[in-house]
Image 1 (cartoon, rainbow, N blue to C red):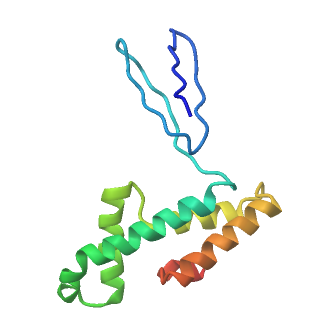
Image 2: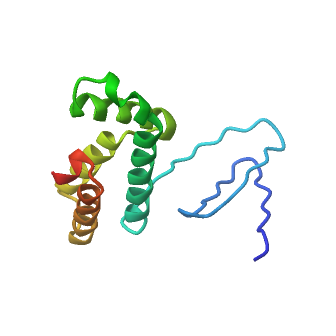
Length: 131
């Protein structure tokens, strides 16, 4: 497909849908206000990505495993490094899912998607996935 080229003028806003690849070239000093977010439709993709990132972090740090006291400390170490790489740890992701699941405004469809995400976290061996 052909690229869509947009020149955004002062005072204009541009919405880029979730999952759209895009590149920005600022032609002059610019203030960018953006929010990278997920919704019910992208939740399982985000969940899968974060599960993969946690597993990759564990694999990368595996030679340090014998330097920690127990599995809890190992998990905390991996979560800390994952956050440095991804901006969010697996624990923060689970806490966000739990918050969304318990929110009074969560729809049945949202809650079902979140339950699927928790099941996938548990299958992947993430300790908080069993909540």
